[in-house]
Length: 341
Image 1 (cartoon, rainbow, N blue to C red):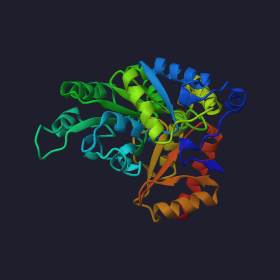
Image 2: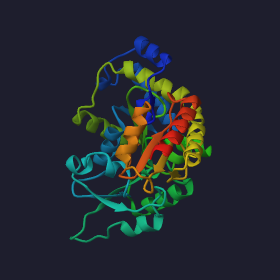
Image 3: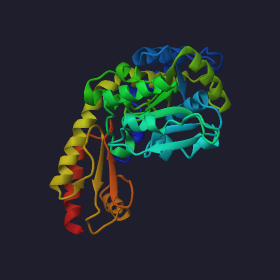
Image 4: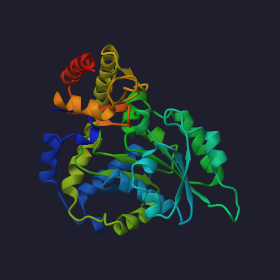
């Protein structure tokens, strides 16, 4: 089976499994797990932040950021197809009691002037703007890289108005691989950042949030409130450390495979709906005699998995467990399916 549904399906490497088995552990609620402490220190250094916190997932990390930055009744500004708005179960409202104010972006990037225009003035009728959120890379825009200059301008707006800016950087290292710009440079345009270790980096579980020491102190309490205070968690922090230390450099392989697949999709007679910046390809089948559900079924009959991204879009994601041979086989299958529909 060739699984192109998501980079979340990656399996931990043997080195990760071995590291987890041999990890030195302690009680992380008491901040006594040496492996977690090592991971958090490493992450803070890479991101150029004062401190970092290991959390169970990217969703938990984003929600902790909202809970820490915002008060109930606040509003947060974010792109209309962002993960925090689209895929996190309305958690910002359910837990933090804040509402979204969405802006339509261009390839996932919000116009900084529109961000500034969306900031609420002081008025008894209006909510206060509690946070601005940027997603880089942007999932629903096909893994699009938000330009560093756009982030700089957005952060200047945030600082001007005294509003914290949070980066949902679940796939930040894909942006790093695509541009050569360091994670530290991207994170410098934020107050806080979340990175996921269990997507393209291949760890079995876990994300990092990073920011100032005072932010992380508050975030640690919110993690506890959300049930994320774990004990001998070094067994999963050790694989995460390997993911952060050793797996970022190979992401260009996934990007190369994504571009190969995009080219093959076009050669098969289908349309690619997005500029392929990183490891996500969106195939447009609106003009075909099949909908997304039917296309997924046809792919699965050839032992290839993908996901529907709407009634006429199919998403493919390349990752560590997909080889160039797998991509070539997928292209052959798409050519065969094209003759069938």
